[in-house]
Amino acid sequence: MLRMVNVGHKSLADYHSIISRELMAEIRELAAAVQGVRVCHVNATSFGGGVAEIMYSLVPLMNDVGLRADWKVMFGREEFFNVTKAMHNALQGDERGITEDERRIFERYNVLNAGGLDGEYDVMIIHDPQPAGIRQHSPLSESAKWVWRCHIDLSTPNPDVLEFLRPMICAHDMTVFHMAQYVPSGDIPDPVIMPPAIDPLAPKNMALSAEDSAYIVNQFGLDAERPLILQVSRFDPWKDPLGVIDAYRVVKRRYPGIQLALVGSMATDDPEGWDFYNRTVDYADGDPDIYILSNLNNVGGVEVNAFQTHAAVVLQKSIREGFGLTVTEGLWKARPTIGGNVGGIPLQIVDGQTGWLVNSPDECADRILRVLDDPEEARTMARRGKQHVRHDFLTPRYLRDWLGVINRLVN
Ligand code: UDP
Image (tube, rainbow, N blue to C red; front, top):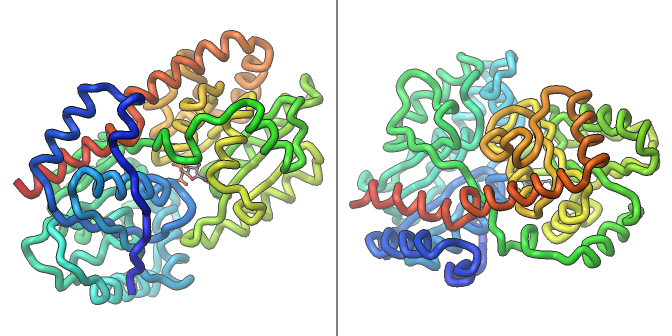
């Protein structure tokens, strides 16, 4: 019923040259106190989007330091994911709520998944709203502790949908949010703040030479000699790919050679993706310098890495954003990075220091021009951005934070 995801192996020791000795020691100490603790993560998809991305590193590292961690993906059909996408939009502030019918569909699938959940665990970590109702219906032993891990911005939610969700959240022992301002007001069990992180050793983030990345980008038909603006993200209105195209068009007037790549995989739990993909293609209006690519063009982790390493400017022009791992990824590659001034992006981009924060397509175009006009300044900022990521947003720090939480829950 729920599907176990095979995540392979990773070794914390491989990170010793990337992170500080203090952090490594802290992880070892926290891990020593939770050896053999059985942990199960549950989420809605093993492919596409930030949550899946994080899990492929976190779960094997949890196992490497001595936990017994599993990752299970809940079962759902299109009718369920249509509801959860509407909920997701509403929780990020969309006025459209969810109907009685949709509530029933949501509950039916959560009851079904609760029934299908087996195994013995000490700590259950439930990611995002889709499986949030499992706890209430689960037959698993009462001794297990349940954590609800929220990856989205709940600071200005549609109140009806938040209240629908609240009793489910409150059935957990603890909650985890990216940022303090994401914790909704009212009753929320024991909120802990923990921003996510990227894995510097994953194919998506490992060091790639300029030659190799240019070669890969060239395979997709782009001209590696001409500058490239890049945005990597799901085809979703909140990511504002149309605004990105507007900004690109302004830049094109001064830099006629500029190219734009919009790279976006289709997540299996995002039925709106195709609609918005088509809208984006229409909006690009056949411009031969705009490349719209997806996993259907075989853009996997290494290819995303190559695009990010090669880009003259990395954008994440979101108008709502949970955290924005693509920003972390761009900064880690020391690329000039421009992001929407929303959600977790300002945690990562200190405006004018490690990149630029923007509030409109025009501002975005202005900052892109600035990067192209003064590459030296842009490089200096990008190097600072990389240091910021090294310190705060790499997987070992995230692992340490989780070990802290698990210690609190079981000891
Ligand atoms: N991603 C990818 N291929 C794509 C689009 C996105 O690998 O075509 C990855 C991207 O590199 C990042 C994650 O999916 O690691 C997206 O996470 P983010 O926090 O930016 O956004 P979310 O999708 O979770 O809203």
